[in-house]
Length: 275
Image (tube, rainbow, N blue to C red; front, side, top):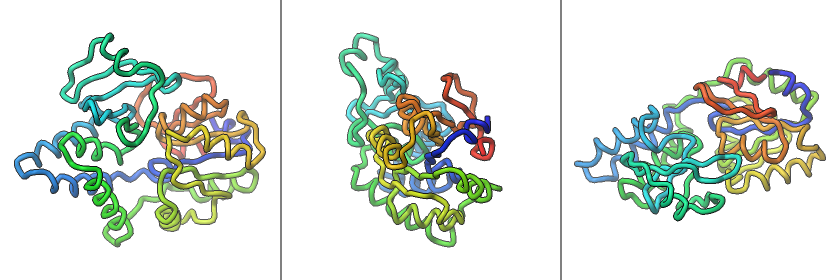
């Protein structure tokens, strides 16, 4: 496994769920939004979110949530073709209806079609289903970010990660590509004691919509061929599939058993298993 990293000239890391694996802030985010729905719906709101986390709901990490149709959409991440659609309550759409509604490649737009790539999006999808406005979710998101800088919130540092990255930095280019805002990225890196580790930070990357464009720009800036670079992340839609399509190698951080195979793909339960 480690020879994939050893042979690379450029490593492109994700941040959330990759350099740290804490999830308590997702629950905090959801609780804030739960308070904004009518009291008689709050229990159902939380139970829906919990079932998403457990993987027993149609909307789970790895799917796409269609706000307009209130559906869970299964997409082949390598072709971007829709293969299955399920209503929020679990009713599968007939193939004819799927082909009519979702013809061609699916384009994530952050407005209607939301790639559920990590824990941030499960509370969001829950909120959209229960009728909250995007302004509500944004206010709660910002409040969660504020909470994450207080003494009440503590990030768990991955044992040995800093030393491993420092060792890799001596021979390779290390890049961070994340959807998070720059101020949040710098704060999180400081708290994780990883500030100064990366040769470049690419923030607000709009993954997965612009992942391929961002990766192409990074390869060009560092003058590296695709096969000499590795994308490392916990989000198959955001970081892994686009990298494989460009010819990069990829390390997918996934603690659960998953049926995905590709000659340039390596699956590990945690980042420490890769480094």
